[in-house]
Image 1: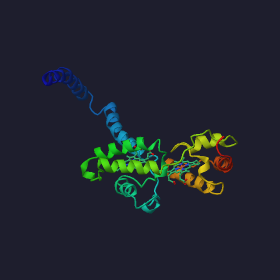
Image 2: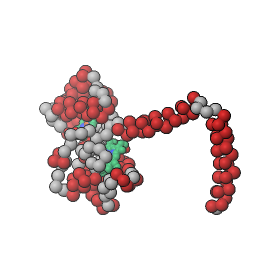
Image 3: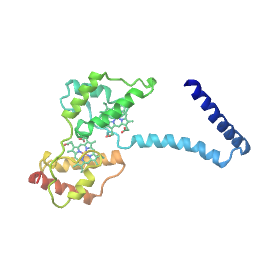
Length: 214
Ligand code: HEC
Ligand code: HEC
């Protein structure tokens, strides 16, 4: 098998390399060549830039974690701050956390050893998953109350996490939460929704928090 693969590589690869080399030799620093080198650089920049979009925003301290002395909170503090700011358990619903964590495990496991990123054991991963699920964002499974602003709410508040349950905050508490979300939008997405839409969402939530699901 090995030798077959080797033979294939030789028969297919060498002529290609040869063609490529002669191509290069015939047309030294051509525009195409320069474009190719540049593209490699752009791709690295692009990867880094895209990885930095919508990272957990700064500002969550260890003391902000629910149940801060629990094993779950301690592991999250220990293992989730090597690459970016501490993520709040409420930044995702219980439905979404397993998928996000699966990406994080891959990165933690595969990032080059020279970065010395602490690697949790399988048991610690289970504790962290349970902790994040237990303290996740509360989502409305029932139909959202109708009313003006509902469409703006659906569009604006489901971008970074699932749509939150309008009943989880009182009428008096919603404005401050929405203003904090506007700050997250600036930090995580580099833009703020228009003030008119913010106002429409606040009015919708103030109303929906009282109405409950219909
Ligand atoms: C090895 C580096 C690394 C570690 C350690 C790490 N992350 Fe991440 N995290 C990333 C990178 C890179 C991204 C951006 C790309 C992406 O979203 O997958 C990211 C993005 C995120 C996001 C925002 C993306 C989204 O889907 O909301 C959350 C939330 C997050 N990480 C949570 C965690 C948690 C919780 C832990 C600890 C279990 C953790 N991270 C540990 C590298 C890391
Ligand atoms: C730019 C990303 C982003 C957008 C857009 C966003 N959120 Fe969030 N949301 C977060 C992050 C990050 C957290 C966790 C940190 C925190 O609680 O501030 C969070 C947490 C929450 C929480 C749980 C915390 C609490 O105080 O109850 C609620 C509720 C919430 N968001 C509601 C909303 C609403 C309503 C909107 C639309 C106005 C919205 N979010 C839009 C990123 C976002």
